[in-house]
Length: 222
Image (tube, rainbow, N blue to C red; front, side):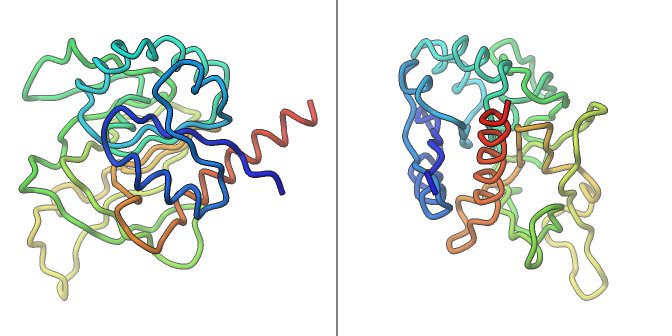
């Protein structure tokens, strides 16, 4: 079976970790820094980082418009943490104005930046993730966003669980219980957490590889 060619936007964030996870998931994974490299891929991963910096770097490397155009044309994409912010149609943040963040509009969602708090509020938890078998997905949240609103065509895949009497809340995540942290709209997937940081579990990346394969299969039959 031919491996799908999937790029990782290599401007900042966990690029090496995503590349390795995609390779283990059956993809031909390549870093993307230039428009010609973007043109050669069949799917793209937008890693974590800092969304205002990512916007600036996309402009610096003259990638913003080529990426936006390919997403609008149906390029499968997966965004983790800041990548989710960049794929959204609207970003909100109570702490600051956001003129420097220009989301790409590939997902009909409104995302709140730094929704769980600052670096010291980072936490890990297990999530039930629709479409992924074999038990909960362990999720690492670092200055993570969450999804505040979803459009009619957006599927919610995972929400933050609450804690029970035998699992006292030591992170403040009960205040965020029920918040949406994974979504999909057509060939576009996004998570507020970092699956690339969980060694030995590539299920989210395999899920995205299957999205890309399905898209390629549909295109071949058209």
